[in-house]
Structures are given as structure tokens and as C-alpha cells.
Length: 119
Length: 137
Length: 109
Image (cartoon, chains in turn cyan, green, orange):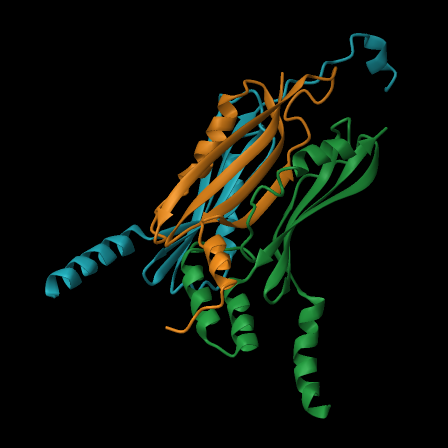
């Protein structure tokens, strides 16, 4: 009788260590053809019994993406919001991946008179 | 008649339904390139609350057997749930094509995607609503 | 054992056949082109990608199926991908379930 109980305890422990991760939300934006500069940013927040007192953990996410793409445009953003439960501790995680694109500079007018008229 | 009044007051709201917004997402809004004409696409599927069905059947038949059967059936519906269980998860797949029917030029902006439910205790309406604007010159 | 009402037996069979789903989210977004917003119209082709994750007893440690679906979508189109419609749903089963992310989009060529 003790062997099945022991086996069940071991399986339950392994399951608890693996945790229970679920996807809360996913979103995708338009994706550029130039995918040579991939970006990734992640923020997370862990709380005992899943009792969170603030959602401020999300705030650095945009800045992290922007810092990887100075003076560029971040697009093709895949955003995943996950929740993981490890027995009595819950972790919330938001992962954003995307691509940094530098748009070509606008073409300057060829006629010099167009510029002079503004003065 | 008076003794039925409390029951009436308790169950009347369920006839109207209890609305829930599960998810809301908003895409970029670009009003720089023309006049914006709004559109809305609304698709739905009937959801079923198995345990509530069992409870109603138990009350109607004055037997606990339907509730027990419903609890067994619930084991076959294990997993994360948003709203009630539906029997077709592809009911919203037509939205992509419908957006282009509403805006044949494919110039669309301001898309708001909603996942909603209206709950009538044992059954529910599971909705996907997409609102947006066609950009018209 | 008391006789169960006969009409419940086919109902039980239908409900237990594993054809129940939960629809979590649907998003339509990204209809503006990522690049080349001006110029002549470009040919658009529908592309579609799907990825699943089977989970038993709710034990899993990742949501990588989302990234798999995303990469499968990217692999089908070397150009701009717009009009991305994303569906996230779960097929429910006996003490197990299968998560699905499905993406439909236009590939601009």
C-alpha cells in the first residue's frame, strides 16, 4: 500500500516542480519584410499565493524594446502574457518580441527653388 | 402568489443575461489618410454550462443523478476556460474575410477586438466582436 | 442502480466525446503596412499558421507553441505580413487539453 502512495507523491512533486503555465493573452501586429534586427524584452513578477499588490512590473517593457532600437521603429511585435503557478507561488510574465526597422529617409525635393521660397 | 415573489426576483435577472467582457484589444488608429467609416462584425456561438444543466435537470427530476452525471461529464471538459464551453472553436475564423468584405480596399484602422459572453445560467452566448474603421478618400 | 433517464445517455455521449472547446481570444490587427505605406498597391496572398500544445493534468512549463505559430507564419512570407488575425482556443478533454494558436494574415508581395 505504501509503494503506490510513494509513487503518487513522487509524481505529484515532479508535477509541482514543473508548474502550471498558462497563456493569458496573445497579440500580434503587422510584420515587416526586413527581419534582420530581432528584439526581445521580458518582464515578470512573482508573488506568494498569487497575491499581487501592483501591476507596475509591466512598465519597463516598452523602454526595454525602445532601448534596443535607438531612433528606429519597433514593429512585428508578438506579445505573450503568461501566468505560472508553482505550488503556492505565482509568476506573471509578459514577453514581447519584435523587429527594429529603420525607414528610409524621405526624398528631398530636387528643385532648389522649393527650399528658397520658404525663406 | 407572494411566496413566489422572492423566486421571481431572484431568477428574473437571469432572463436578461449577465454580460462579461473577457478580453479587449485595441489596434492603432490612423485618421490622417481620409474619412473613417465605422463597421462592426459580430459572431457568436452557444456556450453550455454542463454543471448548471445537471443542476436544473436534478431540480426538475427531483433526483441527484443528473448532477452526478454532469460532474462526470465535467471531467471530460478539463482545461482553462474563458466563458462557457462551446462545440466549435472556429466560429470566429470568418471574421478575417468579413473585414475585407466591409472594406474592399483593405484600408482598415482602429480595430477593437472583443471577447464577450452573455450568461443565461445554463447556456450562454459566446461572442467575438470586431469594430473598426474603413479609410475612405 | 436507479435507471438514468434515457435522454441523458446520448447527451452524456455527446458531451464526453472530446469535442468541447473554450474560445479565449480573437484579435484582428495590423492592417496598416509595416513598410512602404505609399506607392502602388501590392498583391496580397492569404497565409495561415497553427501550433498546438498538448497538456496533461495542467502540467506544463512553457507557452512556446505561440512562438512556433509565429515563426511558421513568418516562414511563409518574405515580404510584409499585414492583417494578422490571431485566435487562441483550447480543446478540452479528459484530464487533459490541447491549446491552439492560429494565425491568418496577408502576405504582401
